[in-house]
Image 1 (tube, rainbow, N blue to C red):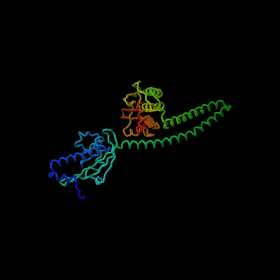
Image 2: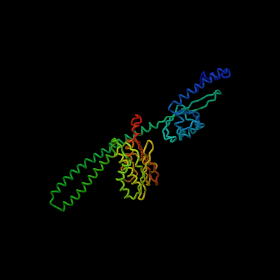
Image 3: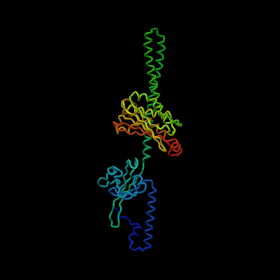
Image 4: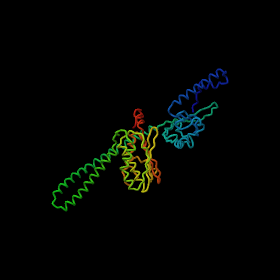
Length: 399
């Protein structure tokens, strides 16, 4: 290691014994000003800046570092970075000797859950400090950058592109199915006309029955394709003032009879005076229908489905809880993926559609589930005044 050149300040410090009280006071004031300047600069930076020793003990942290790690500056003494960011020590190979890469810089991306879930990019580089006794101390500068928003945006973009490709494929398949269905309809009509000219009454009755069945099945398939395209095609919402209570009632009219036939008990506690929100009534009805249908299919006979609401100054929350079979932890992360389903029958598009509609409304959907106990789906809707503010906020505009 090349010899380090002494700074002018170190030269002054080396002659402390020769300074008179006046010059010593000037020196102390100068050091205080420089320290204050450096602290001001460091605390202005958005990235977290830490200094740690080889054991991970935090010897310095700027304000952003405290904030990103959820540390109270007053109780930060002798905190260990390896404990605050689990698995970071192992990821950097700091279990034994200091890795050679630490002298040129190492970067990692880690997820932390405290004080809130976020993704941090951590850059670590070693430096040496030599005191007046020529003892070298090895320390590490650590830079913390919050990349949560960046990662979320990238994931949404990837998801959007993947969903768009699936939607295009689905639309193409539906179109290809529509062509033979149209042809079948035309030929069924020709057969009906030919049958009308038949002189055999017995044969006519048999053929009319078969043709009637074929025609109904063709109409049913055509309806399935139509509803499928309506469900997955990302049409922009037609916003107006809507009452969530009324939309839920309409959705219950559709799925309620099926729940009764399945022997399920539905318990609704919903405040009829919930604030009005801005939304697309038909799309929100689709959201409620999909979630209630999933709850019905997941819950065995004799089970319960509970619907609750609550609100705060910003949002309205609607919760649908069932006592069904629940979802395995490894499957929970895939619930919103296209074509993912744990049911024997189903297209795996229902929750993807729910998530897309909720995002288009500036809201969110979340699922908590425990196998053998049941699931809770939470819908978060922004109140109308919040949506207006978000739309006027430029960067905060709903995506």
